Length: 80
Image (tube, rainbow, N blue to C red; front, side, top):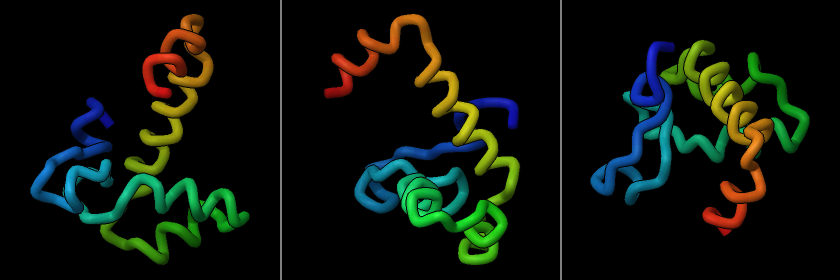
């Protein structure tokens, strides 16, 4: 994945602006719901064949970067 736009799309005309995997109508939240339920990434990809493994890994990398950022407290405060 080269950029955020390759991974995530936020468009008010697609799913009401819910963040989705770019080029799909699959909400990013679906990935985290699957993980929370103990469902593997491979099973998620089977459930949503329009999402690529590279996109899933990109979303997880974005989450990692956000959660390990030195200014996490500021990011959390801004998002809350």
